[in-house]
Image: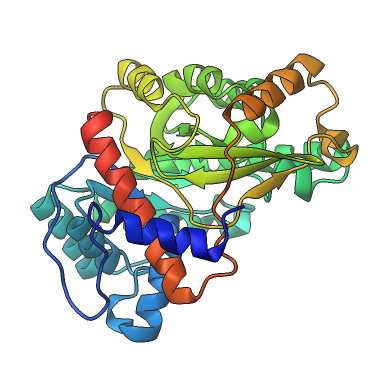
Length: 354
């Protein structure tokens, strides 16, 4: 993995091409792209602002919208919470002024007693002009959170029941739920669920990289989910072998192994109106322990050919160094994150037509 000196050297080398954001002042707006930004892309910058400029807390949707506009992004995806009508109107008006879109992030109702909370969140989304909200229906990564197939099935049933409760609320507010493939269900399981629900108000937030951790082919995943897409998480992935499987890291767009141009083409052909949001999270690479017994506890029916294909891809595309930020100072982490976001927006604009 890439150590501190390599990260900082990379930053210095890229400084002429990618200007860094100064905490102490504003910057010139960059050329716009239609690619939005998921708030998780800016975790280190959010923390830096909280410590040095609290008024610019990026967990606040208005502050995030302003910051992403300065970066040249086309929209934001962020938890909107419950806001009064005046705040929601201000957010909607500002987005319209900038020509940006807003998508929300919300947890589905955990049961009938949680419906009031969910209804209030979707009412805010509707008032703010967020016609789509992203959600997840199962906790954690499948191969980490669940220690038995029975437990996985229990939570899958909970997720289905949550969406059944959510659907009439989404229909009433005319807000679509985008259920992310969140390293939880594989394609056949998720599409069976979407078909069972059969609602125009429930579709897919297509994450183009996540399902590789479940030994699925990324391009085939995008092709399968494209007809259901109501939102897209765009990222690139860097990989490297380790003793228990492979390391799996988020990479700036164009710096990993995913065929992003083909993926964007497939999704646009299937759903011309779908919006794309960057979700490159600056962190240490994840471990995918696909060569351990525990990994297979909830995946007993996955064929060995899927494992073989995945490991071939890892070996062909393995990078000598994967960035690791855990050894960096908070300021350096924010700097690396800023460069990752800027490089990705530039790539989306110049190479992906976004």
